[in-house]
Amino acid sequence: MTSSELGAAVRTVWWLVLVRGVLAILFGLIALFSPGTALLALVILFGVYAIIDGVMAIVLGVRHRTVESHWGWQVAQGAVSVIAGIIALVLPGVTALAVLFVIAFWSIVSGLAGVMQAFAMRRQGSSTWGWALAGAVLSVLFGILLIVQPGAGLITILLFVGWFAVVFGVIVVVWAFRLRGALSAASSGHDV
Image 1 (cartoon, helix red, strand yellow):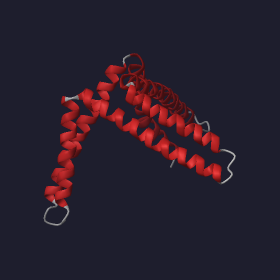
Image 2: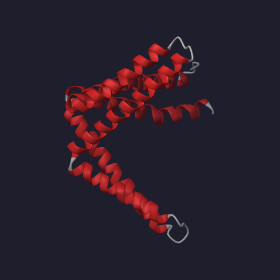
Image 3: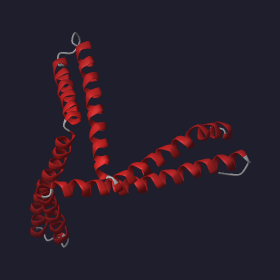
Image 4: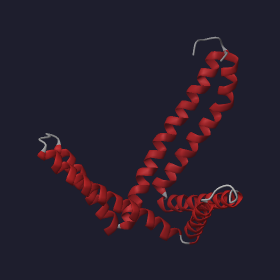
């Protein structure tokens, strides 16, 4: 790629990278300072995505019904997706709670499996089995906490998401300005 081609590519991309970073920072701040709004936005986004995905799956299934024997499964999958999307849009609180319970049960089951693994490690003479056990127990306790205090669990998860989005956004914004700086250096004849 020549320097002029590189410059043209960076010129068309750097501001998109900047916008992406700024949007991540804004979402992160909303998640940190207005977690209810962020949760509602995520549920609505999921609902819209699920409906669009479902409609596309139904259309593809119907279009391919003459060439694929499993087209009915694709239509069924699309219908389930559309129904899930409608439920998310009509009952956003139930959807958020369902996601929380999936995370809680995953945390408990994976933690219990980790406990068994830690004791297997102990039997094999591993010196790190205690750390594995501690992590597994923490996972089980986290899952139980989410079930017992679902509201606090949702807020905690949103706070983690918020901090992640802010840090990610700052990194992407810095990257965008580095791209722009590289473009300036390349156009003035300096090595990038």
